[in-house]
Each structure stands twice: as C-alpha cells, then as structure tokens.
Image (cartoon, rainbow, N blue to C red; front, side):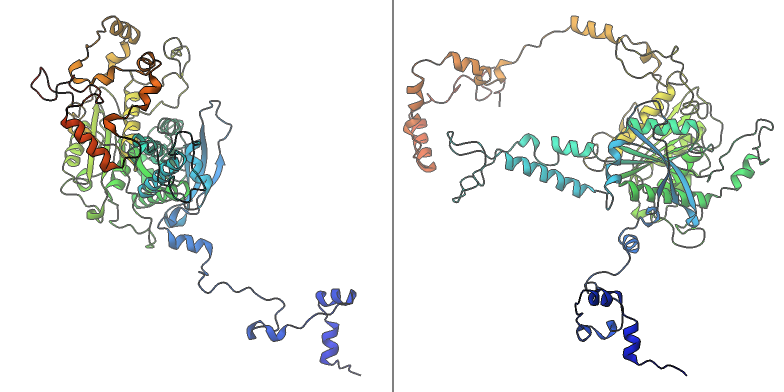
Length: 582
C-alpha cells in the first residue's frame, strides 16, 4: 500500500541543520517569517540589500567607466628579471603583458627605478596632476607653519598653547618666506618626485634585444624616477637576418615580406594601448615617446596624432585606445613616415585643435642613406617643426661622419675593462659606454636631458627655448671631441692661481651690514642692563601704535636720530659719489 506523508511529517523529516542543532540542546528556534519581505520568504538565507544609492556596477566595470585608460587596466607582470643582473643599480626589470589591437596579448620590457614604483605598489588611482601636487605642497608648508608657532613672551615655553582660550597664540606664525608657495624648496622637491613615463619604441630587432634593453636601462637610471615601457610591436617575431641567406630571415621572408606581417594600423593601436597600460598601471604624471629607426617614425606619427587609417578605432571597428599625447618626443634616425603630413602647414592630425603641445627632438647620422633618416630628411623635419604651432620646442641634430644606428647599436656589448678603466683617482664612478668617439654618449645625454627638461608637469622648466638658441638651433652637431682631452685638474689649479678678489663697493652697503654678533658681544659692558631699560623717544611697552608713532614723529622733528643706526652715514640720494645702496 502507498504511504502518504502529511506536510508536517515531511517538514519534520527535512529538518535543517540549524533546527537539529537547536533540538539537540533543548532550544527553540523563533519563526521570523512574518518579518521577511515577500520575495525573501521560502529562501534558505536572507540576502543583504545594498544601499539604494550604492552603485551596483561590478568593480571592474566601475573602473572602466571612471577612467578613459580602460585599455591598460588588465596589464600584468609575466616575467621578473630580479636577481639576473650582477650590477646593483636600483632598477627593477620585468616583462609585462597587456592587451593590444583586437584585445590580443602583447608583451613589453619594463625597467624602472625603485622610487618610481611606489605609485604602482600603492594601487588604486595613482596619478597626480599639477593641481593635486600644488595642493600637497601647500599642505606640507601649512604643517610646517603650525609646528613653528612661537609664544608671545620670551619666558614662555616654545610651541603652541593648546589651552589658549583668548586666541593669542592661534595666528602667531613664524613663516619662512624662503619656502612658501609652489615656487619653493618644497615645491622643487615635490616636482623632483614626479614619476615620468617613457614609451620606448624599438627598432626592427624588437625590445628584447641587448641594445634596446641596455638603452632602456640607461634611460631609467639617468632620468629617475621614471618607468621605461618598451612594447613588442612585432609580437614575438622581430626581424632577424639569416646567417645562411643574407637579406632573408630564417622563415625565408625578405625584409618587405616580413614587414607586411606587421601592418601599420595594428602597430599604431598597440602603441596607444601600451601608453594606456603605462598610465593606468604605473601612475606616471607624463608620457614621453622615444623611438629608434622604425620606432622613431612611429613616435613622430603618434605625437602628431596621425594614424594609418585616419581613425582611432581598432581594426575590428571597435573603439580603440585614446591618443598618446606625449609631452616629449625623441626620434633617432626615424624611417617610414611622411613628414609633411605630420607637422607644418599640411599636417593631417586628428582633432588638431585639441592636440596638446609637445617638445620634439630628432637625431640623424650624417652618412645615413635610409629613406626618412638622411640629412636631407632632417632638414625637412626641422622646417616642418618650425612651422607647427603645437611644437613648443624642437631640436634636430645631424652628427657628421656617423652611420645609421650609431647611437645605440652595440650598446649591449660587453665593455672591456682594460680599455675603459675607472677614473678612480680623479672622479671615481662607472666606466663610460661611449661608442664612436663619444657621439653615441652625446646623443644619449641630449635625449635624457630633453626628457628631464620637458616631461615635468609640476613646475615645468622655464627659460629660453632650445630653438631660439643660436648654437643648439643649428642642425649640424658641433664637434665636441676636444672635450675628451681637457685637463680638468690643470684648469682648476690655473683658476686658483689666477683668482683675484673683487673689492666690495662699500658705498652700496649699509653700515649695519659690517656688524657681527661678535661685535655686539665685545661692545657689551656693565651698563648693558641700564641700556636695556632705555626707552627710545620716551616710548614704552604700554604705548599703543598711535601713541608710539606720535612720539616717533616728535623725535624726527627735533632731529633726534640717536636710535637710527647708521643714519647719516650712507648717501640717501645721488648727491654723493655713487648711487644710494637702496
């Protein structure tokens, strides 16, 4: 026969763990069904409702909606070079993976000084603009002021009186006007802590070649704090010429066939995605583009906002990364670009009226014959840069007698210690990695100085532009070879032997300027106590301001100048030889 269970028997058989636990201890559970919302009844657990005003968007989507740099928010470290270098230089080297065109994975070599990684380690919204930096400076200076509050009477203890009901101490500040405002010591220190970003665009050999990695290390070391981000524009397939068949790679492809495998539109999008990852993940205050050879042409294009398809969209017609908009652009012997469409009157920039200004620098080799990198191309680039209103400063230099790649090819080779000894006796320090009579080192120094000069956002460099300087605006690089033969020690000795003291112009100095605390001490005598009791012009500490000024006017009318130190000893106008010191 069929056994039919009642609802109560069925419910009792399906006791919950909570009910079994309560029954085992002789406790009784309270039925709270009547207190539940209708949609909560019958559920095993009660869900906690979020605040009505709380945004229910997932965290990742919140981040994408809040920041335009959504292309770089998923970048991650895939390989760490920690411990591989025998040189202790304070640099961190990693391989980062980010999403490029069509959201496909792209790798990049990243090297950064340790101080520059603090924003990265902090997480969250890491960027700081000039307004935030200025506010931080004000807060630091205000804190110093609060600490420098002094008492009104000499016998009181130093510091702020917390029980000052009458407010006598509240507004008494010992302000250091030498460190006040953003143009101050504190402002300079904050400016020096700005983390700069350098997007290093390699030559056709890719970012993982020894030469490019050495250049990235050099930039990271000399421009601290900085993050150097070198994306792999060729996605693991850089150009590598076959030893058995010159002119072809190991896959049997010619150079042009290999180049066709890396379309310009995809490379352009990868570069902008790399800039997004650099800004999003490392919180840099600015981005500088630094390109070599093929990468140099791409750096000039990205700075000018000129793209192969004339659009910022991705290849799959989805929205692409935003513009790089670098503060600085450096191109070494650039190739494969149309200079007239990038800069000057015929430029074809996207949203040109909104394109921010940039400082552009280019290095060329005098013996270079590769299209785009010849001395003639250098002249064309300089002419176009001079007529472009969005180029705030420019410098184009041609190094005579040099060939294509002179500034970086061979940089990654081992240095022979016997040929390049430490200058311990004179200066100490690391040996130079100069190549080709020092021109490579000069090109590197000029480039890193360019980054240091124009990449700073808070308290940027001011003064005469390089393009207005008669020497540095010349396209031909001056010969600096004689600087290597200078005898610095002999020049220092000669300067000391021929030094002549300049006699001071005493007519322009106040007599009190000659007095020192020692003079005051030597002039003290037993009458000091009586002298301190002297009340000038009959004034006393009890006088208010109006009374004191009235007594001072009376003293001036009777020509009582006894309490005006130095009065009458310095010419007050031009009636005496020379102008008055004030």
